[in-house]
Image (cartoon, rainbow, N blue to C red; front, top):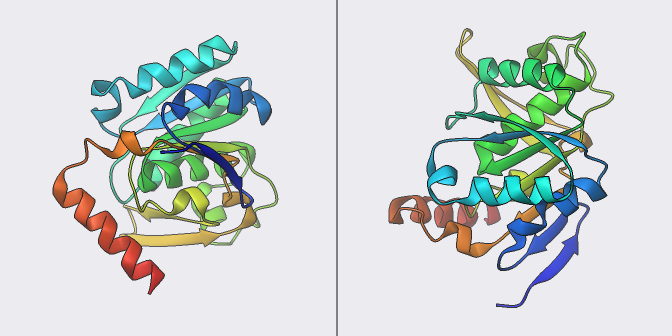
Length: 202
């Protein structure tokens, strides 16, 4: 495997142990106070979360955590994240995980940058999205897609409705892609990812 960097316009940092560059990347894109978003316990058990936090600490970047993102990301959780981002005065949102974590991070970035508006109103276009906060990604799954996309989805549990938003503000600043972080995926999840890649390509 050979490491490389790509920018399209998201900067892709690919290769072994690239998660150790997270702090450097956050700093490069102007972050000094990070809200770190993740899903279940796998990023903790694998040691990835600790490595990312150490990378941030080495660059003098303050960090608050918010774990517990579920598949099909939920509006209520994103709203909780918006409140936490505002409370800790975050200036950068960092997603460690797959598509649901990334979409949640994008939603939190939009909401925290526009605290006067309801997140669902932004999401459904009732309030025009004119600004957001920078988002970075440490990817843990193949075929997430959101790390290179201008789109994101949220589910409004109260309305029973899932909706997407497409905007240039959904483009993350960087995506760290170490393929070795996907090695612990169950075979079923790997197969789902491969199928997802094929269907989006076709």
